[in-house]
Amino acid sequence: MSSQREVDLLQLRMQRIRRRVDSEVEDLISDAEQIFSWKYYVVRNPIACSVGAALLGYLLVPQKRPQVVSKVYLDPEASQKIVDQSVELHPDAASSADAKSGLLLSLGALGLNMLVKSGISYASRFVKDTMLKEIAGRELPQEAHNRNANV
Image (spheres, rainbow, N blue to C red):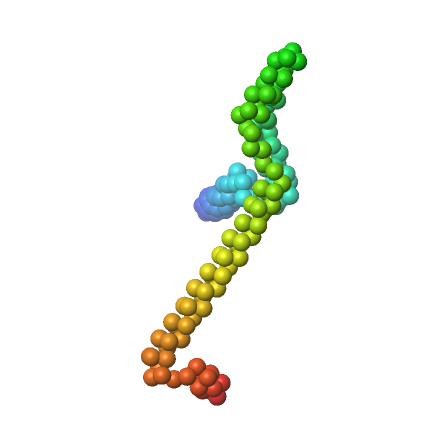
């Protein structure tokens, strides 16, 4: 009987070991999933992740390449000829009077736009009030206001 008891004890120990191994394997799998999840690191270290993302973005974005500037030197006669041709091509240089009139036109357009919007708003309110009067049996807005205040 002692051998049967030893067998039973051994089987019981093996069952306990199997259960423990199963739970340890499940824990190991969940830990591995957690380690490979980027969300885990963002939740635990948000500042470090933000700095890392900014650094990665800085490294991935290409830098602006320096522009190659080639300088061409002309003799004074050729330079004067180019300047004269430029003045001939663009005789209407913008003056400060043109700039002031452009500013006044912009302000006028802004004011006209505000007036049109106000007029449309007033007209739509008038039409709405008129339609509500027709629907309510020609009830005056003051009477409706008084009735709503009493309720």
